[in-house]
Structure formats: C-alpha cells, structure tokens
Amino acid sequence: MSENPSLQERYAAAWCDVKQPELDGANPHYKSRYATLAAVQGCIRKACAKHGIAYAQRVKLENGEAVLVSEVVGAGDALHLSDYPVQFVPNPQSNGSMLTYAKRQLASIDWGICGDEDDDGQNAALPPRQVPRQPPQNQMDKYRAALVRAKSRGVSVRDAMEHVGAAIGKPPESFSLGDIEEAVRLVDSMQPHAPEGEVETF
Image 1: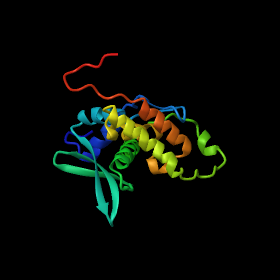
Image 2: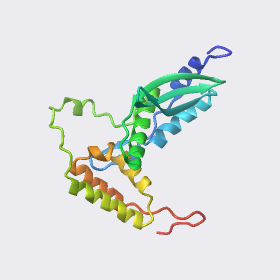
Image 3: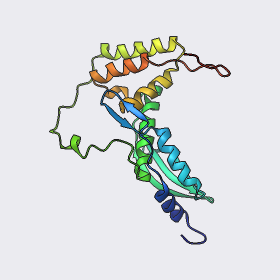
C-alpha cells in the first residue's frame, strides 16, 4: 500500500484483513447456524480500525423507494459500496427485524463474509417447492398473543421481534405456519433483562 493510501486502497486492505465471524446464532427451526449482525459488525470494525476507516449503513429514499446504502468513510471522504432495496410495512417491530436481516446480508456482501453454514449448494439443488401460503389470521394472532405475554413479563416487544426476525430470517408477514410455531416458542422462552444495577439470579 502507498505511503498515503486512498480510501479505495484502505478499503481493499481492510477487506483482506476481515476475519470470518463465528456462527454465534442458531435457527432451531431450520437446524442451522448463522453469524448475527453483532458478530458481522464486530469483525468489520476490527479490520477497519487498523486502516483508519469506518463502515456505515443508512436508509435513504430513492424514487419513492427505501434503499439501504453502505459506504466506507475516512479522512473526510466517502466511498459508496452497495444499495440494498428494502420494503417497510406499517409495523415498527417488523421493520426493525427486516432491517437487522438486511444490514447483516449487505455487510456480508460488502466484506466477503460467509455468515451461514455452507451446504455445498444442496438447498439450491432441491426441486422447486410451492411457495407457502400466507398463514391464516388466527395463526398470526397466536404470535401476537405471545408478544403480549412477553410484554407482561417485562420483555421488550421490539427485542422479542428482533430476536425472532434474526432467528427465522424473514419478516412476520412472510411467516409460514411452522415459522409461527417457532416464533411463539422463541418469544415464550425469552426472559426480561435485569434492571440496571441489578444482577439476574438463576
């Protein structure tokens, strides 16, 4: 690298220094493991810090459509990397889950990160299956009821939605019946965080 490297050169050097994150998340429904957004961001930040740059993501409106934009910044300059279209729905919790998933996928693309288990293309080689139908409203009510129960236990509904979204990998409006059953199980198993200054006991 040159004595005064450009932002592109710094990005290329940081890209080469990125270590693959641990697959610290588990999706019990699909019996698979994946790297959470925190794990992906952690390895990116560590590589960027060595080269005096930062990786940033933001949402912008483009022709009336929401787009997740990524860039590298440093020394008063910015290098645009990628655009990732996102679709918002009238539900803040669903949007939070969707953005978490989109940010993880985009960061993995920008930095050559493999955040999922490699199945050697087995899933892609399977014969096409029918797209699951939208679950009936009464099934979605079971998920909403689980969120209400979680709130009554002191669990943040937003945290619960993000936890479910990260584990299942899709927004609630795309859940299958099996996804809903798994979402209810995940939410019912969540416990509230201990108040600040207190320690949880088991």
